[in-house]
Image 1 (spheres, rainbow, N blue to C red):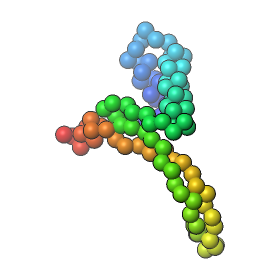
Image 2: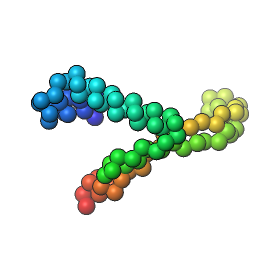
Image 3: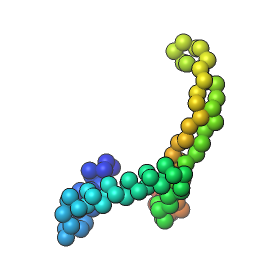
Length: 93
């Protein structure tokens, strides 16, 4: 599902809202989630799952094309852990 499909689906379920208002709501939710993760906070959506930030240490990697070793910098990556309700729905339990 793309963001535009999500907006269309929400607008269809809430005909009292204008599509532009639904777009603002969805954008605001995503911005707040992004800002929270950028601060290092955890974002939890009950029944869906939680997003957190994992840190990767700096390491020595290998360029697959040339085979030469390269230094890979430390970085932060988003991580998602599915909630129990989502896992159950995916496994038809």
